[in-house]
Length: 335
Image 1: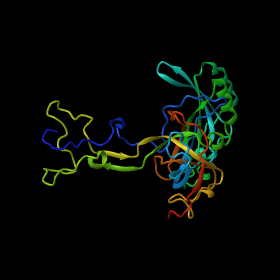
Image 2: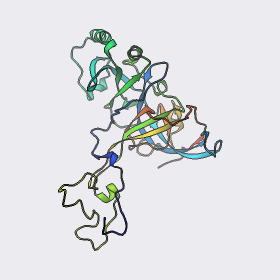
Image 3: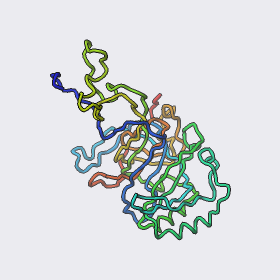
Image 4: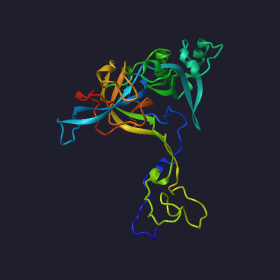
């Protein structure tokens, strides 16, 4: 602005516009990584954020000047009870993108699913399975619809969260055979992920409601003699053109957005959550009683919020999927 001696632009990326509220607590994954493995598997898992602590690990980066030395790092613990796939979906390629062509449900559906979706009164599983196999050659992708089991986690609810995951396999037929083998069964996190691999963490961030441009965009507070307002901007646009541009920092919804944290390394996985639970439990969560995943760094979302894990879509160059050397995990009381 010409009348200012100091430039005070908006702080915040325009790449995240519009900053609207997420439609649901469970985020949507729009892109999946290319799979190069020999055997078929789901391309991710879903769990509940339990909290954070700190650990001591040995730096294994080959380019780090501190390679071989120990360092204290922040870690996030995800409670990952077994998931249950209950549907197989086949997608075909069209000029307008992927389109759902055929779907088959499991025979033994969980009773907790009634809290989320109605069950079909008359459903022939065998007929739908044959119809799926007949269309297998025309399909481009196989995905599975899974639901969580909150009863086995530390979240105070019974209603499961429903998500969709792509099945990675060398061919569509192998993906269908794998999906058919795990349909209606409990799948544990150790069947999908391994220690040392990089994953992307997708979740809905903490909501802060309707906020002004100072907190939402970090603009400078005007001087005390300013007219009408201080916690605002001096001008929202020119007389010509007579419209407000989208680049102008405006008040609105802050937080509760779908965000992705790329390349979080899995430092540790286990079946006994008590070994990493702080004394007294995680704050606002409690004790982890089953499977867990410990990630390097922080992930979006608040405690008890679903966190979707996906194999890294843009992994670091030269990264080797080797287990980390963790020598200490803090279990001191966080209360």
